[in-house]
Length: 113
Image 1 (spheres, rainbow, N blue to C red):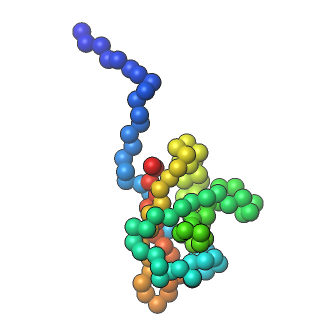
Image 2 (cartoon, one colour; image 1 turned 60 degrees about the vertical axis):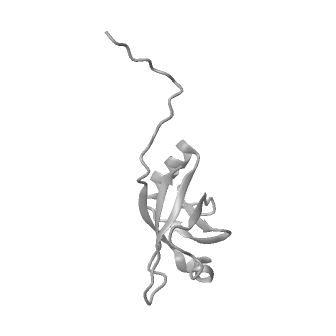
Image 3 (tube, one colour; image 1 turned 90 degrees about the horizontal axis):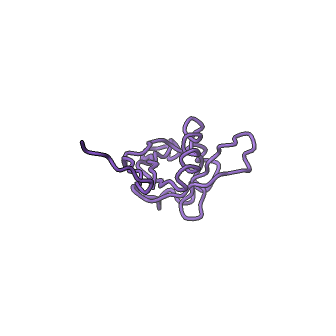
């Protein structure tokens, strides 16, 4: 009979699929100043925003030092848990509006690691 050795040193391997979502409140922040500099697959940064006391899971998204907006409220709780568990998430710009209204929304992909 064969035995299975179990070790605590096994690294959890997760799929690289990620979560696709969009940013909100683009008109209220720095997006207008850098919208033409953003390119598909640019890496964005995410930070908790404690100034939004009405939303304890509020996550702001930045490009360099410019605040673009926030993750929408339907996904920010899940992403907040991912950050607490894994310490870091990767945010990648996947789509930006090209039509008449540049504030229609930005789509981002959120991945662990």
